[in-house]
Image 1 (cartoon, rainbow, N blue to C red):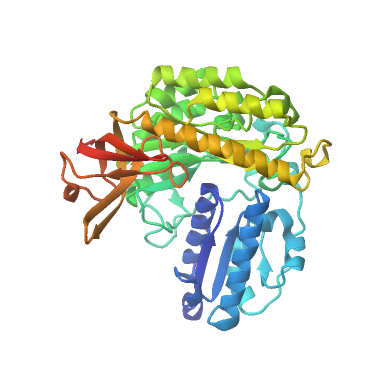
Image 2: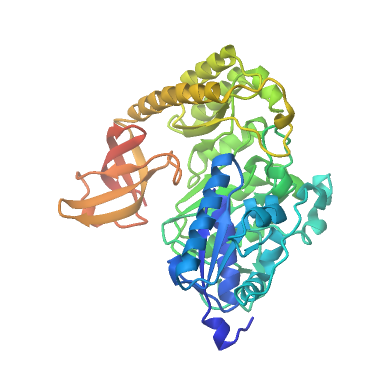
Length: 495
């Protein structure tokens, strides 16, 4: 791709909200923009265009996205920026509705605009109007049967799946072979790697499939190519993300393809850890548990989306399982890897939830010994089945139940962290800061995913802190805790 000298001087800032999947999408947008002559800047005040990659998952995420767009509009009113552009899930989900309700944004772009994002931004910065898309159910863009999606998927915009022709600028991709349309926006030793997009499940509370579409796996070769590229960029931990990682491969004719792919990813030169996120309990099969728990280089970490434990509530949610089956699932993982990490999210206050249902959820949480739990209060989401349910609970009851379960979770996860005292763990160093009081070295243990599961502070001991740098993998003995956070004495370099 080429750009005029004037175009090359155009600056763009990308602001990313939401989950790790959005991070991948932003880095694809960054790659496309750089290839089209745009200069990336960190400070939005220095940009000609501010692109906000929004989240549209729950009410608070929507509010945060709108607030961020308004903050960007304030920068535009008082400085260099000439355009504020909304992309991402909120923009895709609401399209022209968002544009009408938020005139402070100069344009609202959907996923279909990503492939030509550079040209779109140039026109918007030049003051040309952009007609936002009308929202549509993206599940209808692909065949219902997963195996029929292969060729049809090539014609549907799938953020984070892009592979490109071999004419990208240096720094965007390897010198030969398939080239990755991605530009890292961070420099840490961990990076998300997208396995798939979309979801075929029909959970009553979730709107994600309507704006992310049906489930589509990336080809294993594309995932491996991107993994090698990330390793060449200094990444030591690959965090595999999707809406439902346990479905990987079903549309490629092999439901156990993840079990084959994980050892290949772990064997990529330079990669120390491979972590799988977003496991659906109903699809988490014994063969996948075994590979995650026992494959060298794949961290024994189980991010299981339980959502509740009462069978009554789960069935109204259009989900399977319950306390006993969930405990059996955790037990099977711990039988293979006793120190395996486990986290989940739960929703309280779902329509029709009773005090007995909350008691059952609490019984499960006590028995489950999870390392981290996100607790969310139910709220209606546009277009979902649950929004039509009767039995809605008053807001104050939902808030009380969130507070009650959150307090229990805080106590239980702190206890679980204390259980790790005296054990050796592997720690990936993420920050090294030289302070007046000495070096502060912090990272994450294998059971701690980026951003969500706490951290591990390394304290002076057998292995000098000065020998540790960002990206170092070290074995440490856990000697203390602070909530879910750990303190460990480094004993030896892990590898």
